[in-house]
Image 1 (cartoon, one colour):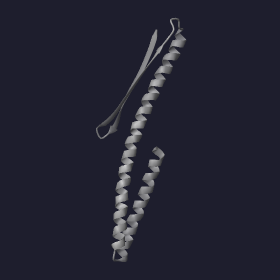
Image 2 (cartoon, helix red, strand yellow; image 1 turned 45 degrees about the horizontal axis):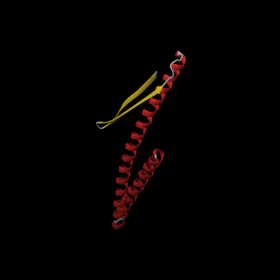
Image 3 (cartoon, one colour; image 1 turned 90 degrees about the vertical axis):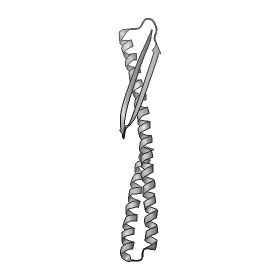
Length: 121
């Protein structure tokens, strides 16, 4: 006698992107098995399938989030370099203050994004 359990899950990640995951587990059983033992094995197999599917989806979601964060970090780093360059060529104190504020904002955003990235990785 064999018992099989499976679990599937589809997650909408937004922007017309989905993640589908499926797991199936089978276990061979002896001929004589009590109903309570059969139910326990069935429940355990179903739980294992669900855990594996959820782990797979979480890895995919994390990878997508890491990619998005790295893209944002690159953009803020580019802005930072731009503003640092503009600060160096600023002629008035007013211009320097504007670029110093922009630099400060870039550094804050980069710190925040890097913190979020560290939590995921």
